[in-house]
Length: 411
Image 1 (cartoon, rainbow, N blue to C red):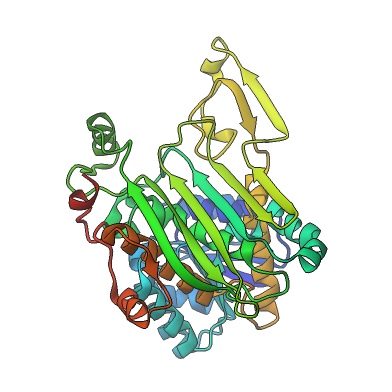
Image 2 (tube, rainbow, N blue to C red):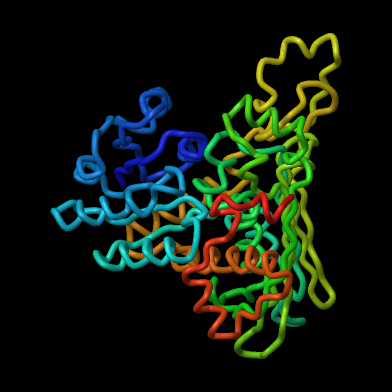
């Protein structure tokens, strides 16, 4: 039984512990003392997930657990990993370390995290839930023989959209690393690459060739909504905005056949519909697939008279903004979105002393593509990822939006 230690007690930590209710071979042994840690610990204990003791330092937490999960804000992840490495050097017997997407705010930070894990030989798991989603996994299995006969997919489209994040730091481009492209584009870019990857190949098999992107501030830059952010989170989006819409495409090359394929991505924080929507489709020679998470097998209707009894719209679906009308209900979001299976994969991998299917190298490469997309918009041109000079620039590149200078780019 793996003993898990959690660093972070916000939204994602809560979602991950809900997923763990369906996972064998792991229990929550400890949580780092932070704001809301006590509430998360109570949930874990009440749900039978483990003792969930509260520990005052990373080192102490590492000494009482087998695996550490970094669910803390992006801005402190390198600092936390440095503390984890020091704990291992001091004798902590960790079997692995998890990091929630995105791995870091930029390539430099992501590479530092990878190097730190290598320094002490720690197996890693990059938690990118969408690559584990049932529809993604199932269509790959269903279409594997078709791909062998007809060839791999040539075009995929991936979108994630909702009305905006829960936490204040997600809206802060300096702390988070950008806007919707950093927050959700990392999902769509990672799953797009995986959808194009031929069955049986390594997740990093395809070679990125070029990236183009277009970013905009369409809703949250308007005075009315700037005021909402100021009132709710204390953020001045007139001074330091981030993009609420991002779209673009990445071209890949198959190193064995030379065939080029394309993954399109679209993300927004201005999707005022039923709730969070994940929309994916793929096209190959003679075959295709598509799915939309808003097509739930369960819908309920709540009329105006009855709507007053609804306390929380998100009991139906993450990021839901409506509590009346025809509502799609996801009764097991943690499983639908892939959180359950990424935890299962982590348990198997770390129990066997190996890296997870998607490790921090995959996270690093995803961040590199996200940064290339920011660069493409800033420069107004397609980024050539076959150019050594461009790749060298990406190593130290920090987008203007991440620097807090988004006003000159978005207004």
